[in-house]
Length: 93
Image 1 (cartoon, rainbow, N blue to C red):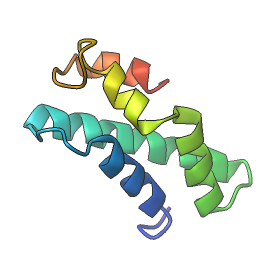
Image 2: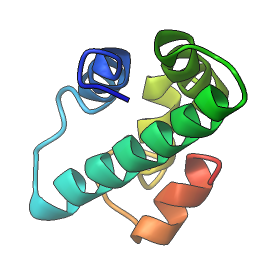
Image 3: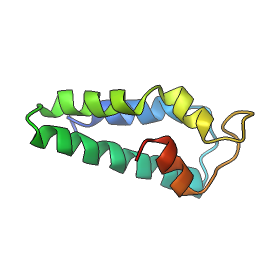
Image 4: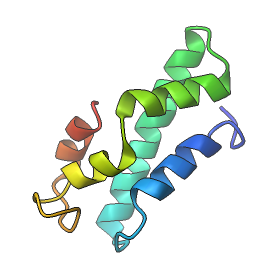
């Protein structure tokens, strides 16, 4: 999947993490989710979708970006960061 084909994934994550202070842990989490989305898009491509449709489908499966990030917080918003494992569960992986 080329950089042009993953632009929807990048925009989705930029929107999801907008307004959150970037710490090394937050950046790691964002990159982990990016990798999961790219991997899922790759699976969907292997099943016959074109790259753009595969990226859109992977994003759709994950759900609303704001809900995702809010679920990573302590119930009062995304101000705290759980272990990456919890984030992956929240991301459906």
